Image (cartoon, rainbow over all chains, first blue to last red):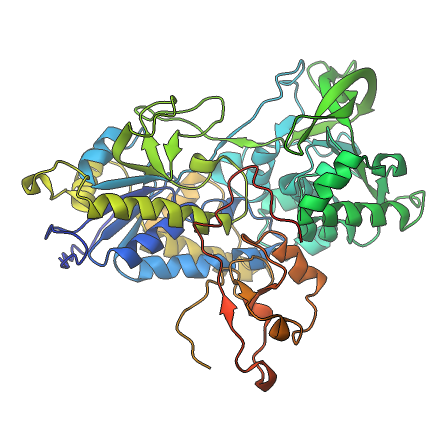
Length: 488
Length: 90
């Protein structure tokens, strides 16, 4: 049971005609959610903002996505916690949209609902063998080593093989490769989940292949991450020099994109630097270009388990505006492995009552205002309903991308508030139950809401447990542990 | 030096983001700055509205020779990058 000091502070709103506070509910406490909260509080001095999350812990992918060996990237958490500590914004954890409370109910309780719950599912390849054992999505694997309670039981088998194939060459793919190949002594002092550290310490994986269907010019990773993985001590890097040949179309792409030009330069340098053969016992990282997966191969010895990927060679074809796509050439080869990780993109999950574009995997919107359907008609908006972050733009970009995304969505909210289009037109319908109404409903349903103070208890305990092992924190990785620590 | 705005610094100066991206408005001042490191350039790759005189604010250390420097911050919505956006060549 969550206990709240029911301190009712009614502020005069300076930006609207109403004397009732603007009540905003943000679903999702990752960067999109928190940047949105920050900007709403700044623009609407009288507003009351609630951020709800289905986990008892806040911060979304900053906690469960950023790799354990990238602690500086997590510094943004300090900024986010200050938003809650301002007193005008509450974090309410362990509330699941759809099961604890419906979207319809939230829209009745609040003037403004902003959905910022990201993308918790995966794109699928749709090829034969995709459900063989030993094949996981990178998202699940990242949740597993970052201690997300829903990733706790992934139990990837790192002991029956020396080779892992990762499909995809974005930053998530690089993260996964790096975690598989780094010396575990280096990982031991990070906030990596201890069940993952143990598995990695016992891992027999020594070779990782990063497979991309296009070439080095099109690789989706960014320079910092690529530089880091290429700089791992005592790691043999292999890139086929033939793959580095560029076409005029490639040169054009590099001329118009500084990122791609610098990535290509890093990969070229890495292809020729270093020895041409690995030394005995050395770990290996292979960049494989121009190969797309046709199907997964099943092991003869272990029925139901993956034993490799059947790859088709590709060629690039221009599709206008400088973009090139991969086309199969009909030539095939096999790449053996005992574990395959798909790092081909996250995908958002729709909820009841929410218009959704299944093809793009996003909620149809214009500048963050949710549209009633996929027709693209910008005049049919869902009043008071907005989106921000990956749910709005698709699963791309970095933490900072959400800063601009939130600017745009909050600008739309502010316009709508100023024009009085939220809720009914008459003033008598203006007050909304907000937080008090939400908590009342949740108490009736016996939902154990975890307030920010509950997260602070979890945080304190994780740090305490971490200090016993020279780690910044020892993450609690089960729902039971987290909920127990939150209420102690 | 007159300061009237606070620049976002999500990573608190550890070269792990580009939220403190500023544009040096006068070439004369841009050339007075030390060249950006590889690490800074990696972050500038990801900055919105990148220009030829862009730098990360957290890497510009104030000193007397920079007195009078004028910095602009990219207009967030005008330069908002949507999927498929290709930055101007530089």
